[in-house]
Image 1: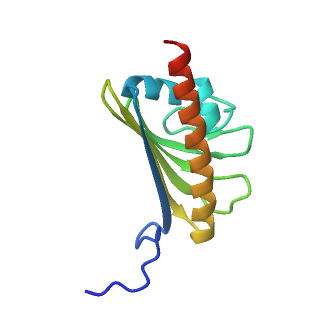
Image 2: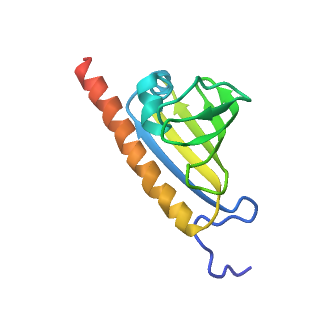
Image 3: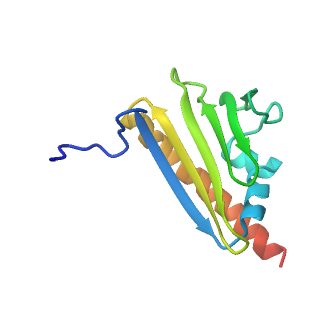
Length: 144
């Protein structure tokens, strides 16, 4: 079977997608707690106008909105996710996997319109991950 012109990020079923993972030398529990603290949420999701609840709509002050579909503490959140200037709705899943020695943060976004939107999100999530890592590592070094 020959693969021709396979485009990175293009799927058969969910349009364009992007995924990013980062492993840190921190416990899964501490990383999850940070990601869903006010400070952590502000970094990766934005300043919320209300609490996150399953089957409830959310909106950030910067105009990102959607619906929480799944929220399994210390595992993952799956949500519809839309930037203010977008016509389409994407699906975002954020996972925290690991143990008491290390944790991996994973962002996976699908149902993106095209490669341009995929590249936009690649830049966006890389910037967010850098900020998360800095906040977590700085927090770790200042508390020990």
